[in-house]
Length: 154
Image (tube, rainbow, N blue to C red; front, side, top):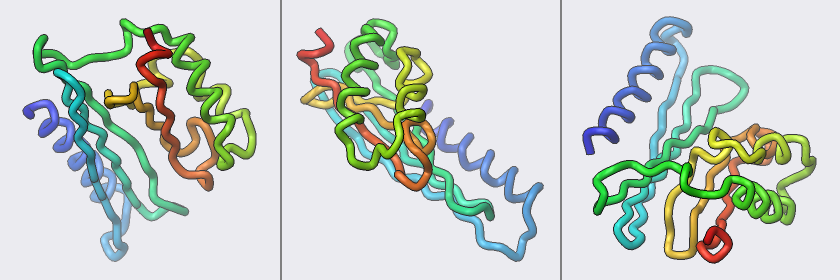
C-alpha cells in the first residue's frame, strides 16, 4: 500500500510540476488515474492507467502495474520467465489484431527485453500485458493488451 501511495503521489507531483512550470494557467489540463485489481492464487495485481493532458495534440496514456506475492512479501518482475516465449506469443497474438496497421512498432515494441514487457498483471488465464500508444502501434490505434496463457509460459 505504501508503494502504491508513493507511486500515485509521484505521478501527481510530476503532473503538477509540468503544469506549473511549462503551461499558461488559463488552460484546462487533466490527470486521470484509473485502476483494476486482480487476484490470482497468492498474487495481487494492480494495473493503473494514467491519462494526462497538458495542452498537446492529444492526451498521453501510460501504465503502471505491480504484482505482489503475498506469501513471499515481495513485488514480482519477469526475471523468472522466458522473454523469448513471451515475445513470440505476444507478437503472434497482436499480429491478429485488426488495429495493427503496420508491423514496425510491433516488432520493436515486442523485442524480448524486460522494458518491453514491464506492464503486466497475473490473471487466472495467464499473464496479461499492457502496451501504451506508440509501443506496438501508432497513437491513433490506442492501447493494446495481450494475454500469454500459463500453459505457454511453463
